[in-house]
Image (cartoon, rainbow, N blue to C red; front, top):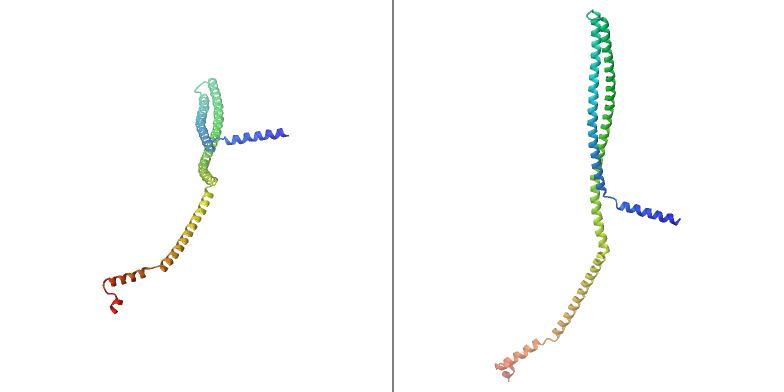
Length: 239
């Protein structure tokens, strides 16, 4: 039982390999169309030849029919001459008989040519049907080839796009972008935190500077010194 399973698996693998190694369906279709066009050319050539035979058979039929009628007419003329004493009766009978024999031979040729003409006409009709069928198949296959080429283009474009998307996911680009977004958000939050700290430190320094400001006191001292130098000290003038 295991042997049969193994043989089946081998056969299945070979079948799949054959399918994978099949030629391009577009090339196969194009070759099929070329083959059908060659068949069409051969059929057209055969049609011309058979038509020629049919025309010749019909012409032969008409010629043999004319001969048969001519022999019939000659036999009648000879018999009439014998009747009118214009020629010997025995000789007239002999010649009239020969004319009728020739007429019979010609009539057989008429019948044979007619049969050949009818046969060739049937061949022509069949060949014309075959040619029309080949033309119809060529037109059908050419339309299917156009559709197949369009489908292949769409299929290849879709395959390439899907492949790119698959490779994009497989390389972790999407997850990398997500990590970058998290990193940027973290950096933005950190920058905002440092800004808050900077603003807080600046406020404390401003309060300290304001509380320890000695600018006004120094200005008062300098004013008193200047007045003293100029002898404008109010306290001394009052004493």
